[in-house]
Each structure stands twice: as structure tokens, then as C-alpha cells.
Image 1 (cartoon, protein in one colour):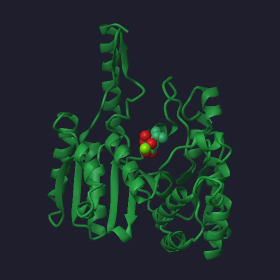
Image 2: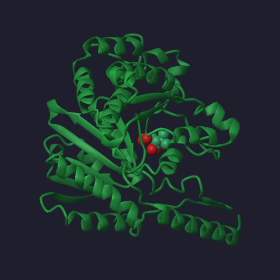
Image 3: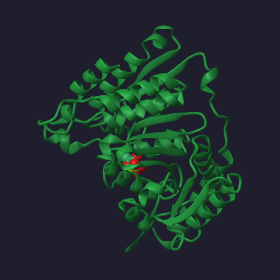
Length: 369
Ligand code: IPM
Ligand code: MG
């Protein structure tokens, strides 16, 4: 590209983003009013099919009555594999996306994204296509007095045009987008969660001293929304110091709710999950007004597969995601049952032969259920 072509590419991107903004805003699905709720199940790559299979068994067990009564349908969505995505040259092939859109909520195994190249991450595409703007990630360690929940903006920031940067000779440029509407809805979701759950502290995490326009806007809008929630103390932190703060015992316990732009949320939630016991232990919800997708916070673990250890993958993360899914569709009793069983389950999965297999863990869990 030369500078004129790059400018033209940038003009097109800006236009597309304005169009996206115009289409934002849709009515929220009310699950209490739905006769039939369809849960789509997507295997994903690597350890995905293994952990998803066992999570599905657990869901079938918990929802047996509702499935038998036709109130809940579990629907397997095929074709979201790296092989098929590469063959079709699309992060989510059209027929797969159409199938996904027939569901209300999704339980998804991790999908692999090749480094470099042009294939966009299936996750990023799905979050955008289904407008799943709130990435909600709880991290809870009762014995350490830690009870955090992260509201990561999930459709904008560094991700929305992450595969659409421009390259000029000797130079590469990516774009970051933050919008008023996009920030308002994630901030509103975080503050509403805080209010409804009796939380009194909310941290806005950015790098607004450097990313002045985008993070500056994010911070300003969060404070605008905060005016509606006078009972909640709001503090601003920069992402770098927040990564340090999460490690400071005696200080980190005060944090409750976090709201942050996409990339910082990606990074900080892996750190938080690690503090909880590893990325295998945290669930992740991707919530929009119409659709929602629930997944493990971790990736497809190709190294585990290469070592022949796929069966030893830890399903805790996707099971926590399944519990969040149940709560989202108003199956609160089933969600609580699953969460309690996860707490109690004595079987330890280590990701290696010294621990239990994924199947053994799921069996033990269902004994408790
Ligand atoms: C996550 C993952 C994804 C992300 C990848 C798989 C695209 O790391 O959900 O945190 O970067 O958002
Ligand atoms: Mg991540």
C-alpha cells in the first residue's frame, strides 16, 4: 500500500464503523418469556471437543426434565473447526453462522487462531456478528477474600479492526476504536451488576494517559454513567499498575467490579484467572442483548494435544461457563447446583497423567449432582 491507498482504506473503515454504530441497540431477550430455549453447543479445536463433550453431559443431566418437556433444546453446531474455517477462508463459515443464529445461547469450546495470516479469530468474529458486547469474567477465591468480576468491553477497542490494519513499506498501523454507545452499554452493564449484587467499588481500568482519545473517552463515559450510581465508589487505574495491584495481598481485596476496554480486559482476566488457580479455572460469558455465548477462558491447548494429553484437559473453566449460561437463561437453581458441585468435587485434574481425566472429573461431578 502507498499512503493514498492507506488513506482510502482508513476512510472505508471509518465509514463501516459509523454504520456499525447506527445498527447498535437492540431489544434484550427475556428468557422468562420464552417457550423454548435453544442452547447451541460448539466443540471448537484442540481440547475443545473433549471438554465440551463432558460439559454437555453435565448440562443434559442438570436439565433432563426441561429437555424432556421440550422447554430446552441442546443443538450441536458442526463445522467451527480450524480445518473447515481455513478451507472456506472464513473465520465462521456462512452456514455455521446461520446455524448459530438459530440458537439463543451458546456453549463453546476454544477455537484456534493461527498467528499472522489473515484468518480472523472465530471468537472475535462471533462477538462482533452476535454483538456480544459484555465479556463477563468472575474470579472468586473465598479463602483469600477475593471476589472480583471483570466487565471487559468485547466488540470494540483493539479488536474490532485488529485484522484490518494497513501496511506501508517499512511500517504497519493498526486501529483502535472506542465509541460512546459501545462504552455506555458496557459501563451500564457493570454498574447494574454492582448495584444488583450489593457491590460498592468499581474500578475503571485504562491507559488514558497514553491512549488519550480512545481511553480518554472510555473513562469519561464511565464517569458519566457513574452519576446514576452514587452508592458506588469509582476509581480510575492504569492497566500497568492494575496488573501489579492484583498481586498485592492486603490491597487487592478491596477491588470488586472492573470495567475495561477490550485488550486490557483480555490481559488482566488471564492474570486474575491465574491467581485463582490457572486459566483452566475461570469461566467466561459473552453477553449481548439478543444472544449470549459462554466459553472457557483458555485456548485450545495444542501443546496438550501434541503431547497426547487431551483426555487430561481440565473442564472446570467450561463448566463454570456452563453455570453462567444456566444463570443467564434463568435456570438459577440448576446453576447453583452446578456451582456447588464444582466446589465440592474432590477429583483433581492437573492436565497431566498424575491427575484425573476430564471424563473422570465429569463422572464424579455427576455423582454429586
Ligand atoms: C479470550 C481469548 C480471545 C481473546 C482469543 C481466543 C481471540 O484470549 O477470550 O480472552 O483474545 O479475546
Ligand atoms: Mg484472552
